[in-house]
Each structure stands twice: as structure tokens, then as C-alpha cells.
Amino acid sequence: MHRRLHASLALVCVQLACTTKADEGASSLGSSSDATTVTATATGTTGSGASSAATTGTGSSTTGGATGPKFDVAVDAGLPPPDETTCEAAAEARSSAGCRFAPVVANQNWTRTYGVAVGNVGTDDAHVVLYDRFGAVLEQATVPPASMEVFTLEGNSQVLSDHQSPIETAVHLQALRLESDVPVVAYQFTPYADSQVASSDASLLLPDHAWDDDYVAVNFANDGVPWILVVSLDDGNEVTVQAPTSFSGLTAPGAGIPALGAGQSFSVQLDAQQALRVITSSVDPSVDLTGFRVTSTAPVAVFVGSPSISIPGPGMNFYKDYLEEQLLPVAAWGTHYVAAKFRERGGETDLYRIVAAEDGTVVELSGDVQATYPLDAGAFVQVASSGGFEATANHPFLVAHFLTSQDQTVGPKDPVAYPGEGQSGNCQTGGANSTYLGDPAMSILVPTEQYRRRYVFLTPATYAWDSLTVVAPSGTIGDILLDGGPITATPVPVGGGPWSRASFAVGDGVHVIEGPAGFGIEAYGYDCAIAYAYPGGMRVEKINPAG
Image (cartoon, rainbow, N blue to C red):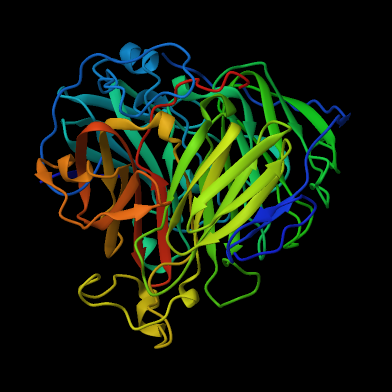
């Protein structure tokens, strides 16, 4: 059941006052206020609790670490890499590496192999166990340093069916549990082994020490039903879901949970490894769950996603993809982001959604997009960009990054940038009018305040072209080492300020990347009409005083 690999917008502003200074603008939706509260109680079976990725290279051990809440942490402050030598040290450092995770099979009626890839970030062997929803061992393995292990739930298997979270508003005992005796990084792929012939995406999994009790969702809707999935590893965890006052539709009721309209909320109780799913009541491009707030009495993990998406959509093309990503808690949001385009496929733009958690948030964009957006809690703007931009605000906010559909590219595929042939079964049906590279995927941008100096990340073996984007202060990219060697891609300025990006191909497996100052990374991959994307890692410190 596992496999081991050794690392050898211009859109119009709606409902908000927006000031744009360039042709690239944005759309936005309103804000939340006092909620009408409806309460439902849902209970279920109690689960049991318990105490990264690809060109061959070597890393170095880490020492030190920063602890405690911080605001506006400077990326060049000379902070050492987080201490990830022990589970306790990684938790204290609020690292995205950790020792306990809650993977979820979030796509219902999925027949293809689902995978959780684990990368060892340290210098000691990691003993990793994947538990089922009842706490029984599904699979275990010893992962050597700088190696990865892929735990899979095989396609069309009973164990895969048992752990699929139905796409309905309800509470189910569905979450898996992944544990290691030393810190690891973890990513889930829907699917993994059969990604060559399927709608697909992936998510960085945050360890439970990075979870919190307050989230604001960012999502996307057009041809599918968007969803929010909340996972607990504690018993008796009361979870409250609140719709923003701008919400234009209804959520679907189910299993004693009422439908939500604008400004309404409900509360349910989750026990360990239970997952609450909330979906919209209909497929409507104007109704999505961006701006919904999730709070809880104990820390939770919150995932968002949607099936059958075309971007910008709706109803654009035959190939529509599945989206998923685990969210950053509000406490970890920052006030400064650098949005860097995915590696170009063929003249396409990328899409971004910017969402606020506090009333009176004013977001300023500079660079490819120049605009000012006042946002209240739960409001968002949608921005299209062909290169990149800087985003700053007076209050912390969140940015989601979306890859557009393959038919937004102009072909043919560049054989130098993307040599060879795709692995996907879709390749034989490709058209000549686009590159046929990629399709919708979702990632969460990391605020510069949460950048690190060292990452261990991984890329899967089931996509033809894996890539990495590095964002760093201009002039420092040449000092960053990937698997012990310099980055050779030419840096491109972002936002007209002191930031640059470098985007380039990487191989399959576990990678180590490190530099003299903080920088950010985003990992993603293309094949014929499929793609995946996720942040490659981050600090998850509580830098937002209001979170």
C-alpha cells in the first residue's frame, strides 16, 4: 500500500469601493456582521487519539528556532531555521514540519488511488504510521533522512471507500491520522498513482501543532459544489460555522444541521477524527463559501475545495478539475505577500483571491496590479495577474493562488521549457490551440512574515513536469542552494519593489533548499490537462494579534 522513493482582471468591483490604477482590477463580495445564530448538535463515533522532495541532494541539520507570538517578523532578521530535531522542538517553533497530521479523502466516489507523501526533514530515521478512522494501523514505514514514503489507499478499494468524506452537509468519522516519532513534512494527493488520467490537486498538510480555533475560508465556485471540511483530533470539540452577510445563497442542510443564509451560523460537536463537511445547496457560480468563518473550542484543521472547476469559468471547457487545500489559521495571517506567477505555460494569467478577517482592512497592490481595496471581515477581491504583485494591508489577510484552465494558454507547448512527452492519458486528445499543460489547481500563498531560510519539500513521480517558484529579496536568489547547488534560473522582479521570483523545473522526490535570509517557495506540477499546487512549507507562528 505504499511506495518509497529515495531522493537520489481586469474584473469589475462589486459591492465595495475599489480604486484601481491599472487595467488589471478585481471583483469583491461584501462583509459579515452580527450573525443570526441557529444551533444544531451532531454527534458520532469517537475516534482514538495518540500521542519532503526531488532532485538528489543533501541537506543540513537545523538548530535554534524562534518561539512566541510575533508581529511583522522581518524575513532578513537573521533568524535561524526552525528547530525540527524533535516533535517538541518543531511544535515550539511552529514549523510546518511536525509529528501528527489528519489527512482526508475529500472527494466522494473517488475510484483512483489516493496518496499521502511523507518527507523526512531531519538526520534520523522517521518511524511513520498511518492510522485508519478507528485508530487501527493501516500502514507503517521507516523513512530514512532526505527520503520520502508514499502511503496509498488503492483505487476502488474498500479502505478508500471507507474513508471518503461524502459531499454532503454532515458529520462523519472519516479522517485518517498520520504520526511520526520525529518531524516530517506531509502532502496529500487526490489522486496520487493514477494522476495521469484524472482531475487532480494536492495539499500541504499542516501538523496539529499549527492548527488553531479561528479560520476564514477562501474557495472557488462555478461548475461544482464548493465545500468546507473541518477535522478534529479532540473529543467534545464544538465547531461553529458562520456565513458572511454578503452570502448570496444557502448552504445545504443535512443530518440535523440547518441550512445557512447570509449572516447565520450553526454549531456542532466533533470528536476525534470526525470531519464536518458544509456544502452549498446548488451549483451556482455566484454562490461560494469564501468568507465563511470557522471557530472551535479546540484546534481544528480546515480544508476547502470544489469539484468540477474551470478557471476563470464557468462552463469553459470539457476538462474541469478538482480543487483542495488546507487553510492557514487567521492567527498565522500576515500583512505582506508577494504574489508570483506559476511557471508560464503559454501566455496565460493567474487568478488570486484576497480575503479579510477584520472590518476596515485596506489592501494595497503594487506591480502588475496597482489598486486599493477596502475590505470588511469575510469580504474578498478576485484579481488576475500575468506576472505578479506585492500586497500589503493595515490588518492581516489571506491570499489564495489559482492556476487557470489549460484552454487559457496559447500553444504549442515550448519543448525547451517542457521537454519530452506528458504521462497523462489525456495527452492523446489534446488540441493544437493551447499548450495543453495543466488545468485548475489551488495553493495558499505564505506571508513574507512566515518565510523560512530552509525547506525540505517533495514532488511526486506521477506528473511529467514538476516546478518550483522561489520568492526572495532581489539580489539574494543567487545565494539560495537547491540540493547543494545554486539556482540557475534568471530572477524576475515582482511588484516593482525589492522582491524577485525564479521559476524552474525540478525532478521527482525529496529536495532541500536553503538560503541566507527568509524566502518563500511554491511547488506545483503540470501534465496534459491536469495539475497540482501547494506551498512548499512555512513558519506557522501566531503573528496576528487579532487571530
